[in-house]
Each structure stands twice: as C-alpha cells, then as structure tokens.
Image (cartoon, rainbow, N blue to C red; front, top):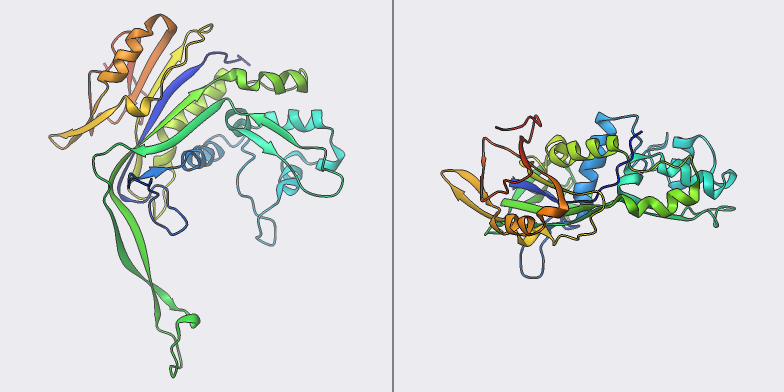
Length: 320
C-alpha cells in the first residue's frame, strides 16, 4: 500500500436543472437568508458514500443506513457487529480504532464513534477525517424555485371530511430549482489521521494512493450516479483538483469566490481567471492541477496552463 501524504485543494461543480439537489425538511431547496440556494456537505458525502459502496464493495463504507431483519435501521453497536463480527463491548479501544480505520469512508471523512449501551460508555472515539467538504453554494445568477402539485394514487384517511365515507385521493407538492450550479470547495490533508493512526498501532491504515484514486473518481461522477425522482436533472459538471508538493505548507483560499459562471451559445462557461491568478502566485507550491469537465456542455475560460491537465469528466480520459 502506497501512503498518500500530499495536501489537495479543489472544488466540485454540480448542475441542477429542474431538480432538487438537497431539500430541507419542508422539501424545498435549501436557501441562505439572502435567498441564495445551497446544499450541505452531507449531500455530496452521501452521494460519494453511495457510489463507493456500489462500485467498490470491498472498500468498506461504515456510515450508511443499514436495516435489520425487521426493516428498522441498525443502531451504532448493531452496525459495528454487522461489519466487524464482534460486539463493541468485547473490543478494546485500540481494536475499535483499527477496525474503523479499515473503512474507506472513515479514512476520508472521519467519524464520531459514540455508541450507547451498557458496558460501552468508555469506547468513544473521534477521528478527524482527511477530506473536508464545504457547503455547496449556487453560483448561478438566479435562484428560481417553483412548486407543482402531485397526486398520490391512495387516499389519506386524515383528509376525510365530515359526512364523507371515504377520503379523496391525496394531493401533495414538490419543489424544484429551475437552474443551479453548486460549488463545493474541498481540501485533503492526510495528516489529519496521523494522531489516531500512530495511537492505534501498526495495524491502523493511513490514507493511500488507492484511496485517493477512488475519491477522485467519486468526486467527479457520484452525483450523476445517484439518481432519484427528486434528483433527476442533478449531475456532476466539473472537478478541479490542485495537488501541492509533498512538503508544502501553503493554504489556498476557498475556491467558491474564485470561479465565475456565464452562458454562451447554450454552453455553460466557467471563467477561472481569479483562480488561475491565485494558482500562478503559488506555482512553486503546486505539483499538479487536474480539471475534469463535461466538454459537450461546458466551456472554460482563463484556465491555468502550467502543470495542468484537462480530462473528460465521464471517462477520465485526457483532453488534448
């Protein structure tokens, strides 16, 4: 296993056309106080976990809803036993830490392992993930949300009116965003795992080159891969990956303010002028820049040239 020990900064662009990428508890697209639509980091992490679980079933995805035989969700001790075939109360904290670090999603996103139950109150472990993902902000110039009525084929007894023998068919509503382009800034810092890995001993797994390859694929394809009625029309659009030199201590700014968007000839055009300027100023700290995008529908302006490779978002093949 080749350990990955370089830091990365980047952003994921997700387009949403007549769709609802990340609804709130009222089923509306989430909005900031100023009306700008956004998505939580959990929305992207969920898509990534779902993709990794399906495509790399042996990689280990621990934090994912799992049902018991009675179709109720497992609690944390149940999930631990289901994955590791042992009870939390029978395991030492060192073994628990090693087991948790064997799971790819925990090496990436960390974990707050705080099981409840008799005999396990001292088994709590907190793992600081190596990948941090920010909320996705809609950088498109409009935030047009609309609602439409939908009909269920079944009646709702709670809606039966006085004097009626049977309730009418239930009516509901669904809300969608007309067009959005969400930008999630992210960073990768393998050193976040160093303390827990060192404490858990030589059997504890660090972040590897193989982990990063899986993560990179998931960052550019997982939202498109996860399809549902509400999210139909929500797809990956672009990934920018900036990998620093091994010993670099430089911290790059949030990319959310450095990427501009427009439309020209029915193509979405991303202007990377401000981002390119920042990267040029830090050229000596950067090992490589990779940009993955939908070349059929996305155009790039003022993209970085030095140390940069462009790839097709879907296939991963380099674009000449």
